[in-house]
Length: 292
Image (cartoon, rainbow, N blue to C red; front, side):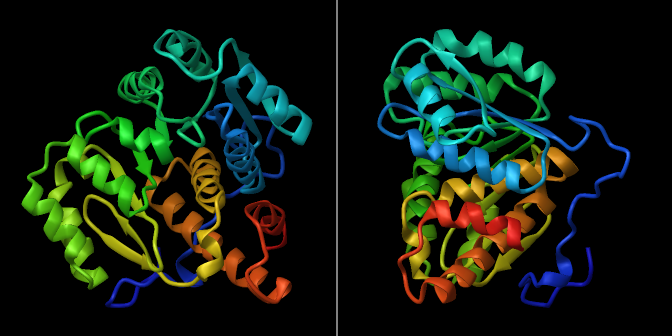
Protein backbone atom coordinates (compact mmCIF):
# COMPACT_ATOMS: atom_id res chain seq x y z
CA UNK A 1 0.00 0.00 0.00
CA UNK A 2 1.33 3.41 -0.97
CA UNK A 3 1.98 6.14 1.56
CA UNK A 4 -1.19 7.44 3.18
CA UNK A 5 -1.82 11.01 4.38
CA UNK A 6 -0.96 11.79 7.98
CA UNK A 7 -4.66 11.95 8.84
CA UNK A 8 -5.17 8.45 7.43
CA UNK A 9 -7.57 9.35 4.61
CA UNK A 10 -7.57 6.83 1.77
CA UNK A 11 -7.30 8.04 -1.81
CA UNK A 12 -7.56 6.16 -5.11
CA UNK A 13 -3.79 5.65 -5.15
CA UNK A 14 -4.07 3.35 -2.10
CA UNK A 15 -6.48 0.94 -3.77
CA UNK A 16 -5.05 -2.44 -4.73
CA UNK A 17 -7.39 -4.56 -6.82
CA UNK A 18 -7.07 -8.35 -6.97
CA UNK A 19 -5.08 -9.63 -9.92
CA UNK A 20 -6.74 -12.00 -12.38
CA UNK A 21 -4.48 -14.39 -14.27
CA UNK A 22 -5.27 -14.71 -18.01
CA UNK A 23 -5.23 -18.51 -17.78
CA UNK A 24 -7.33 -18.78 -14.61
CA UNK A 25 -10.17 -21.29 -14.34
CA UNK A 26 -13.59 -21.11 -12.72
CA UNK A 27 -13.11 -20.82 -8.98
CA UNK A 28 -9.57 -19.43 -9.11
CA UNK A 29 -10.88 -15.91 -8.51
CA UNK A 30 -12.84 -16.51 -5.36
CA UNK A 31 -16.00 -18.24 -4.19
CA UNK A 32 -18.45 -16.61 -1.77
CA UNK A 33 -21.07 -18.46 0.26
CA UNK A 34 -23.78 -16.02 1.37
CA UNK A 35 -25.99 -16.99 4.31
CA UNK A 36 -28.73 -14.40 4.14
CA UNK A 37 -32.36 -13.47 3.87
CA UNK A 38 -35.69 -13.98 5.57
CA UNK A 39 -39.23 -13.66 4.27
CA UNK A 40 -39.27 -10.00 5.30
CA UNK A 41 -35.93 -9.16 3.65
CA UNK A 42 -35.34 -11.13 0.46
CA UNK A 43 -33.83 -8.16 -1.38
CA UNK A 44 -30.89 -7.76 0.99
CA UNK A 45 -29.53 -11.18 0.10
CA UNK A 46 -29.84 -10.51 -3.63
CA UNK A 47 -28.13 -7.09 -3.42
CA UNK A 48 -25.23 -8.40 -1.37
CA UNK A 49 -24.73 -11.42 -3.62
CA UNK A 50 -24.78 -9.41 -6.84
CA UNK A 51 -22.37 -6.82 -5.41
CA UNK A 52 -19.95 -9.63 -4.55
CA UNK A 53 -20.16 -10.91 -8.12
CA UNK A 54 -19.64 -7.42 -9.55
CA UNK A 55 -16.43 -7.12 -7.54
CA UNK A 56 -14.97 -9.83 -9.77
CA UNK A 57 -15.27 -13.08 -7.82
CA UNK A 58 -16.23 -16.18 -9.79
CA UNK A 59 -19.29 -17.49 -7.97
CA UNK A 60 -21.73 -16.53 -5.23
CA UNK A 61 -23.99 -19.17 -3.77
CA UNK A 62 -26.80 -17.96 -1.50
CA UNK A 63 -28.21 -20.23 1.19
CA UNK A 64 -31.63 -18.92 2.20
CA UNK A 65 -35.11 -19.99 3.33
CA UNK A 66 -36.82 -21.60 0.36
CA UNK A 67 -39.24 -18.79 -0.59
CA UNK A 68 -36.41 -16.25 -0.33
CA UNK A 69 -34.13 -18.41 -2.47
CA UNK A 70 -36.80 -18.77 -5.18
CA UNK A 71 -37.31 -14.99 -5.19
CA UNK A 72 -33.55 -14.51 -5.62
CA UNK A 73 -33.50 -16.97 -8.52
CA UNK A 74 -36.35 -15.06 -10.17
CA UNK A 75 -34.52 -11.77 -9.71
CA UNK A 76 -31.16 -12.89 -11.08
CA UNK A 77 -29.95 -15.94 -13.00
CA UNK A 78 -26.39 -15.19 -11.86
CA UNK A 79 -26.92 -16.22 -8.23
CA UNK A 80 -26.95 -19.92 -7.33
CA UNK A 81 -29.12 -20.82 -4.34
CA UNK A 82 -29.60 -23.55 -1.78
CA UNK A 83 -33.18 -23.64 -0.51
CA UNK A 84 -33.78 -24.36 3.17
CA UNK A 85 -37.12 -25.49 4.58
CA UNK A 86 -38.79 -22.92 6.80
CA UNK A 87 -39.24 -19.16 6.95
CA UNK A 88 -36.00 -18.31 8.72
CA UNK A 89 -32.64 -19.74 9.73
CA UNK A 90 -32.46 -21.97 12.78
CA UNK A 91 -29.67 -23.74 14.65
CA UNK A 92 -30.45 -27.04 12.90
CA UNK A 93 -29.31 -25.50 9.59
CA UNK A 94 -25.72 -25.16 10.77
CA UNK A 95 -24.61 -28.54 9.39
CA UNK A 96 -25.59 -27.50 5.85
CA UNK A 97 -23.50 -24.32 6.17
CA UNK A 98 -20.52 -26.17 7.61
CA UNK A 99 -20.54 -28.73 4.80
CA UNK A 100 -21.04 -26.12 2.08
CA UNK A 101 -18.15 -23.95 3.34
CA UNK A 102 -15.66 -26.71 2.52
CA UNK A 103 -15.73 -25.54 -1.10
CA UNK A 104 -15.87 -21.77 -0.52
CA UNK A 105 -13.32 -19.11 0.34
CA UNK A 106 -15.47 -16.58 2.21
CA UNK A 107 -18.62 -16.70 4.30
CA UNK A 108 -20.89 -13.65 3.99
CA UNK A 109 -23.52 -13.71 6.73
CA UNK A 110 -26.28 -11.47 8.02
CA UNK A 111 -27.89 -9.58 5.14
CA UNK A 112 -31.64 -9.51 5.77
CA UNK A 113 -31.36 -12.49 8.10
CA UNK A 114 -33.66 -11.10 10.81
CA UNK A 115 -33.71 -11.13 14.59
CA UNK A 116 -35.63 -14.31 15.45
CA UNK A 117 -34.11 -15.86 18.59
CA UNK A 118 -33.38 -19.12 16.80
CA UNK A 119 -31.77 -17.18 13.93
CA UNK A 120 -29.56 -15.26 16.36
CA UNK A 121 -28.41 -18.53 17.93
CA UNK A 122 -27.73 -19.91 14.47
CA UNK A 123 -25.63 -16.86 13.52
CA UNK A 124 -23.58 -17.03 16.70
CA UNK A 125 -22.87 -20.75 16.29
CA UNK A 126 -21.99 -20.37 12.60
CA UNK A 127 -19.65 -17.42 13.14
CA UNK A 128 -17.89 -19.10 16.07
CA UNK A 129 -17.49 -22.42 14.29
CA UNK A 130 -16.48 -21.39 10.76
CA UNK A 131 -12.79 -20.50 10.84
CA UNK A 132 -12.47 -19.41 7.22
CA UNK A 133 -12.59 -15.76 6.17
CA UNK A 134 -15.89 -14.04 6.91
CA UNK A 135 -17.82 -10.82 6.31
CA UNK A 136 -20.37 -10.24 9.06
CA UNK A 137 -23.11 -7.69 8.45
CA UNK A 138 -26.45 -6.39 9.68
CA UNK A 139 -28.37 -8.49 12.22
CA UNK A 140 -25.60 -11.11 12.41
CA UNK A 141 -23.44 -8.46 14.12
CA UNK A 142 -26.09 -8.15 16.83
CA UNK A 143 -25.83 -11.87 17.56
CA UNK A 144 -22.15 -11.95 18.51
CA UNK A 145 -19.61 -10.53 20.93
CA UNK A 146 -15.91 -9.81 20.53
CA UNK A 147 -15.16 -13.36 21.68
CA UNK A 148 -17.07 -15.08 18.87
CA UNK A 149 -15.33 -14.08 15.62
CA UNK A 150 -11.93 -14.32 14.02
CA UNK A 151 -10.65 -13.78 10.47
CA UNK A 152 -13.55 -11.42 9.82
CA UNK A 153 -14.60 -8.03 8.52
CA UNK A 154 -17.58 -6.71 10.46
CA UNK A 155 -19.51 -3.85 8.83
CA UNK A 156 -21.66 -2.14 11.47
CA UNK A 157 -23.38 1.21 11.52
CA UNK A 158 -23.33 2.96 14.90
CA UNK A 159 -26.35 1.16 16.38
CA UNK A 160 -25.05 -2.27 15.35
CA UNK A 161 -21.67 -1.43 16.86
CA UNK A 162 -23.41 -0.47 20.10
CA UNK A 163 -25.17 -3.87 20.19
CA UNK A 164 -21.83 -5.56 19.54
CA UNK A 165 -20.17 -3.73 22.45
CA UNK A 166 -23.09 -4.47 24.78
CA UNK A 167 -22.94 -8.16 23.85
CA UNK A 168 -19.20 -8.01 24.61
CA UNK A 169 -19.99 -6.80 28.14
CA UNK A 170 -18.12 -3.52 27.71
CA UNK A 171 -18.85 -1.16 30.61
CA UNK A 172 -21.77 1.21 30.00
CA UNK A 173 -19.71 4.31 30.75
CA UNK A 174 -17.14 3.31 28.11
CA UNK A 175 -19.83 2.68 25.50
CA UNK A 176 -21.41 6.03 26.36
CA UNK A 177 -18.06 7.75 25.98
CA UNK A 178 -17.54 6.19 22.54
CA UNK A 179 -20.92 7.31 21.21
CA UNK A 180 -20.90 10.77 22.72
CA UNK A 181 -17.59 11.54 21.00
CA UNK A 182 -18.31 13.72 17.97
CA UNK A 183 -14.77 13.92 16.54
CA UNK A 184 -14.43 10.81 14.36
CA UNK A 185 -10.64 10.69 14.81
CA UNK A 186 -11.01 10.47 18.58
CA UNK A 187 -13.99 8.13 18.27
CA UNK A 188 -11.98 5.73 16.09
CA UNK A 189 -9.17 5.64 18.67
CA UNK A 190 -11.65 4.91 21.45
CA UNK A 191 -13.20 2.08 19.43
CA UNK A 192 -9.79 0.63 18.65
CA UNK A 193 -8.78 0.70 22.31
CA UNK A 194 -12.10 -0.84 23.38
CA UNK A 195 -12.02 -3.64 20.78
CA UNK A 196 -8.29 -4.42 20.70
CA UNK A 197 -8.75 -8.04 21.77
CA UNK A 198 -11.18 -8.53 18.90
CA UNK A 199 -8.85 -6.85 16.41
CA UNK A 200 -5.96 -9.03 17.61
CA UNK A 201 -7.87 -12.10 16.36
CA UNK A 202 -7.32 -11.04 12.74
CA UNK A 203 -10.52 -8.99 12.57
CA UNK A 204 -11.26 -5.66 10.89
CA UNK A 205 -14.05 -3.21 11.77
CA UNK A 206 -15.58 -1.15 8.96
CA UNK A 207 -17.77 1.40 10.73
CA UNK A 208 -20.19 2.95 8.22
CA UNK A 209 -20.95 6.65 8.36
CA UNK A 210 -20.52 10.01 6.69
CA UNK A 211 -16.83 9.12 6.93
CA UNK A 212 -16.25 5.36 6.99
CA UNK A 213 -13.72 4.29 9.62
CA UNK A 214 -11.69 1.13 9.04
CA UNK A 215 -9.91 -0.25 12.10
CA UNK A 216 -7.42 -3.11 12.09
CA UNK A 217 -5.04 -4.49 14.69
CA UNK A 218 -2.42 -1.83 14.01
CA UNK A 219 -4.01 0.88 11.85
CA UNK A 220 -6.97 3.19 11.39
CA UNK A 221 -8.05 4.50 7.99
CA UNK A 222 -10.79 6.90 6.91
CA UNK A 223 -12.83 6.99 3.70
CA UNK A 224 -14.51 10.23 2.72
CA UNK A 225 -17.17 10.59 0.05
CA UNK A 226 -20.68 9.42 -0.64
CA UNK A 227 -23.76 11.50 0.12
CA UNK A 228 -27.03 11.53 2.02
CA UNK A 229 -28.68 9.34 -0.63
CA UNK A 230 -26.74 6.40 0.77
CA UNK A 231 -29.02 6.26 3.81
CA UNK A 232 -31.46 4.24 1.68
CA UNK A 233 -32.08 0.61 2.52
CA UNK A 234 -29.79 -1.84 0.76
CA UNK A 235 -26.68 0.33 0.38
CA UNK A 236 -25.07 -1.43 3.34
CA UNK A 237 -25.81 -4.79 1.72
CA UNK A 238 -23.96 -3.62 -1.38
CA UNK A 239 -20.98 -2.65 0.79
CA UNK A 240 -20.93 -6.04 2.54
CA UNK A 241 -21.12 -7.82 -0.81
CA UNK A 242 -18.19 -5.81 -2.15
CA UNK A 243 -16.17 -6.70 0.96
CA UNK A 244 -16.89 -10.40 0.49
CA UNK A 245 -16.15 -10.38 -3.24
CA UNK A 246 -12.83 -8.59 -2.87
CA UNK A 247 -11.91 -10.80 0.09
CA UNK A 248 -12.63 -14.02 -1.82
CA UNK A 249 -10.18 -12.89 -4.50
CA UNK A 250 -7.38 -11.38 -2.41
CA UNK A 251 -7.71 -13.06 1.03
CA UNK A 252 -6.65 -9.66 2.45
CA UNK A 253 -9.11 -8.45 5.09
CA UNK A 254 -7.87 -4.88 5.46
CA UNK A 255 -7.38 -4.16 1.76
CA UNK A 256 -10.78 -5.65 0.93
CA UNK A 257 -12.48 -3.37 3.46
CA UNK A 258 -10.65 -0.35 2.04
CA UNK A 259 -11.54 -1.23 -1.56
CA UNK A 260 -15.18 -1.89 -0.72
CA UNK A 261 -15.67 1.31 1.26
CA UNK A 262 -13.98 3.48 -1.35
CA UNK A 263 -15.95 2.07 -4.29
CA UNK A 264 -19.25 2.07 -2.40
CA UNK A 265 -18.92 5.79 -1.68
CA UNK A 266 -17.69 6.55 -5.20
CA UNK A 267 -20.72 4.79 -6.69
CA UNK A 268 -23.01 6.94 -4.55
CA UNK A 269 -21.31 10.09 -5.83
CA UNK A 270 -21.64 9.03 -9.47
CA UNK A 271 -25.32 8.15 -9.10
CA UNK A 272 -26.13 11.42 -7.35
CA UNK A 273 -24.92 13.25 -10.46
CA UNK A 274 -26.56 10.84 -12.91
CA UNK A 275 -29.95 10.87 -11.22
CA UNK A 276 -29.72 14.60 -10.46
CA UNK A 277 -30.70 14.06 -6.86
CA UNK A 278 -31.38 11.41 -4.26
CA UNK A 279 -33.61 9.20 -6.39
CA UNK A 280 -31.08 6.41 -6.89
CA UNK A 281 -31.56 2.99 -5.28
CA UNK A 282 -29.30 0.29 -3.91
CA UNK A 283 -30.04 -1.77 -7.03
CA UNK A 284 -28.73 1.15 -9.12
CA UNK A 285 -25.50 0.92 -7.12
CA UNK A 286 -25.09 -2.75 -8.03
CA UNK A 287 -25.48 -1.90 -11.71
CA UNK A 288 -23.01 0.99 -11.47
CA UNK A 289 -20.18 -1.19 -10.10
CA UNK A 290 -19.42 -2.57 -13.55
CA UNK A 291 -18.69 0.93 -14.87
CA UNK A 292 -15.98 1.85 -12.35
